Length: 171
Image (cartoon, rainbow, N blue to C red; front, top):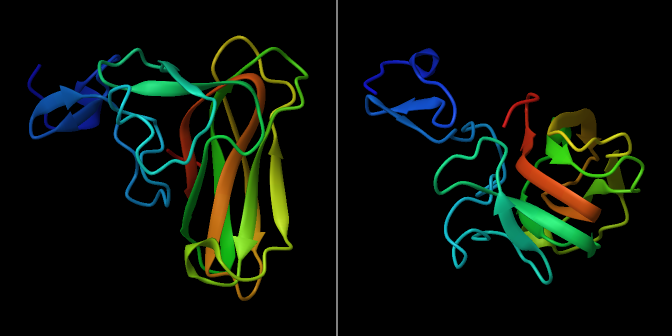
């Protein structure tokens, strides 16, 4: 379908790019790389460190787009990125059995590439998730001296997609 703006497109290709409807694209304000786990089995975790998680169908069932399924892992997958001190929003789309104890953790570092002191963390609780995709987010403040941060997913039978760390509650 030819388009000029995102409103001209519908799921499963809700974004307009070069007059074509394509899979949803992350905002330029999102500090995470590949926040939608998009790509093939070999590229879907580009920019993420992972151990035991797998790719799964995403929220939009968009071709070439994925989510991640976490059976029972801590800090898997995770990603390090540049984050200055100050306010930001962290969240994403999640689904899981209710009350699993799943959460998203961000750990702050005083050096580049997640080096230096790292004694401060914030958690986004995902208790109350449902078997339907739901948006969870909250506002946080990176402490003074923060240069970088690592976001990690902690889940029990958790699906995650469209994860974001940005200046607003958007992917």
